[in-house]
Length: 58
Length: 256
Image (cartoon, rainbow over all chains, first blue to last red; front, side):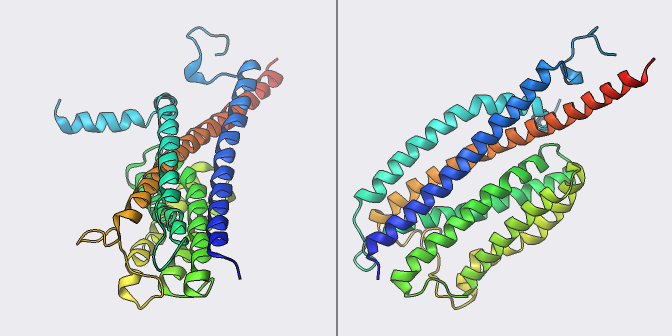
């Protein structure tokens, strides 16, 4: 039989683990997407709306 | 220009993803700082206030359990409003919002179930009972997983948006069932003690940590939701840029 403190500790541990996992996933996802966008931009692929008038592509 | 059309213009201005990204960049740092500060206050109150004369130390589990349970329902409500936005107003960011919210909602529902179970064992003497409240929250958890699976099952975001919007709206019937299950049926789970028409019935000693943790969790949800929406917009941009690059490459090889 666990003591009450152990149940409290387990609850907070699960909460910290879940929230940390969620935050890391959202931040990590954002970083990878930005990396992909930068790589595409470096390769010269631009959004049509971001292209300057008279740009190279027609 | 009348007031109504001004409001509509502001609403559609937000529909522009580029404008949303700029807004997210401005808002997120502040929201993050505010969330951290609220969590510091909430956690400090959670562990410095006294235990309950009956529940003892386990009352502290409530400071995580109640806000998670509240968020699990609020997140689904946000998704249902977004689903309406997709189906009725065809707001371009609505399905981004619904898709971004689903994993966050699933995490908070999971947390509500696990912490409830960890409180139930020492207080009720059981990890789980199939009473109306616990079962309906478990169904909510399954709904979240279903929406996530459906969002990932289809390649075309436009199609999956409409299908999952219908699922989200059908599933919304579960939210009032969860809320009122403790009044409609004889449940082991206790009835509401904070959001009541006649005011909260719990002692301020427990009410303050509970409210501050609820505020912190709500701020955390909105920070994560805005960040996840931004990620989803970036993801769609990457996809469309890749398609564009492939089209251009095809044209170059075909052209003499």
